[in-house]
Image 1 (spheres, rainbow, N blue to C red):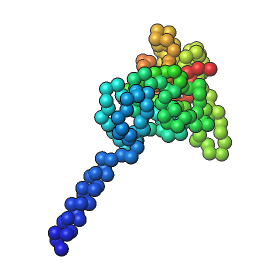
Image 2: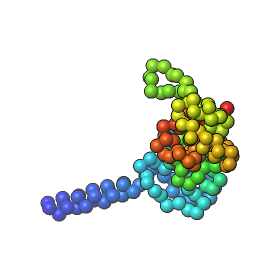
Image 3: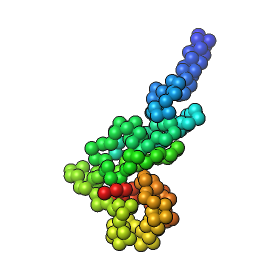
Image 4: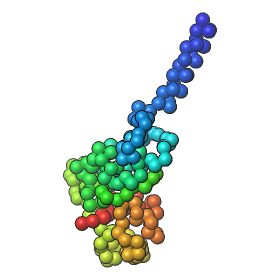
Length: 189
């Protein structure tokens, strides 16, 4: 009787270990097309990728937020398409479909509306970080005059921002500030 219980216990532990390492959301087939996309579940911290492949994550107003595997040269369009497309509330002024995505980066697709009020949809007041002047950026209450000047200096020196996340390259804007303002900025009119 004791041997049978030990046998059952060993088989159960082995099964649990096997299932912990198997993720049905990861496609492990041999991929030769660098533009093909693989979904990586949200609880996966890392996977082994062949040369030329990388993961990128998308959050916000997309149908299936999560991490995906791409080949070199993938764009924001590829990422949004892999995530099932934007939701009906996604702000198409807050992302650039032609922007090249970077390995390991998390991208946010902002909403057009304030979703904190369930009863009504109120459109959010936003500022354009690629075209608005210092006064407009400061009037938005999201930026101080110093940071607004840094935004304009950065875009003058480096060209237009390609993704919302690029604003973190501006002196004075870190991850915390980015997360506060990402729903209130756009990239184009």
